[in-house]
Length: 482
Image (tube, rainbow, N blue to C red; front, side, top):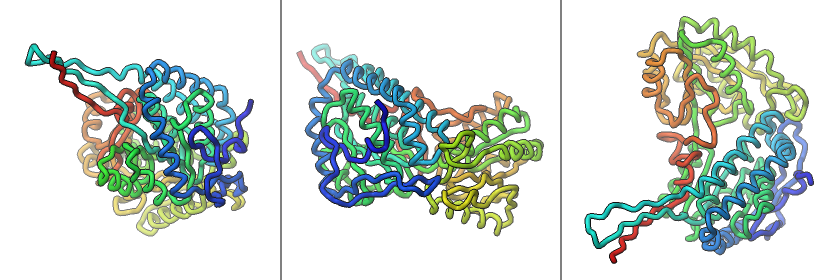
């Protein structure tokens, strides 16, 4: 049985697909063509509260289910995701725009979290602490924190659901998902497969809305919600974090990145060029871990740029559903306008465009040509703010001392990349980079088994590995006197 957008046009509350209490809907368009794909309910606060109450009602039963039973459910969900991998990839490409090959990789990546946390839920071990008093036994338990609000972005609309929902469910926490309005179908498809795998009614809920601020505040303010996990902009993360903090609720936040990508003279240039091309233009540069400030040591800068531009010319921009396309559109016209504004600011302040900077195609979709900027300086917008598009701004540096003065962003610190064959230098630069995770000669350091997250204004908490499930548990200590 296939899975299509037509199966993903409603909300999911208390185990039932529903249109909600409002007749309003949110239109969803294909960013490559501008065509209408369908619509989803534009829910109001009362619908969101109903979803929270459904999660609250299911909490005790799901938390009390043996971990091995939750594992079986999640493993079935993982298998269903692989069975429907092509259907899921097509839904992702249609509503988000990335090439089908990238969408397939996203499905595989997203499903890997479900498989990992299926087993990790069985490893929520407690502790027996040696007691100073022979008449007491000191016991420590890890218990589910409770119903969790999950707010996901549009750029990885399937994987960001599974990366958050899988550890929450494995820990015993029911969830309410609020996906991005641009890409609700991928989230609904994931929910459909979780439900088909046997997640009980109320344990997983989905609410779509265009009124994100009011609806999320209504859910976060509800006494039942004990944790919020969010991926998105630092600006929105601060607002959510302030609200969660005021209510003394837990939070996991993956926020803005502005990642540095450093290449030293002793690096393998072919590997570094290939790695940057693959990472910089994945999803048209619309990822939080995308390299967005590129630092070349002077001795190899010209050779690197020549090879990089040559490789960039082979990028095929177009509709992600078309064979051979390697870079799709930006998510919407506003995203294109932001990128062009950043490029224009850089040029006005002395940067050079070689090549790129212009719109691509016949104007129907939100396409922008891959762009290289040289002679970039720290006061330009591309150096200060996340451009979130297919723009590669290059800096040059003489030595490690000069690099250390410019490489760290004053507020962001999510991902960093460094290419060098000098092991001592690798450890020095790793220690100097203020980032939550770093790829050394590796353009793709993420996986389900390891912790991902930022420092400073790039986030709070970690997703992935054994660290990711800790976000959804609370520690209870019991002193037993016998």
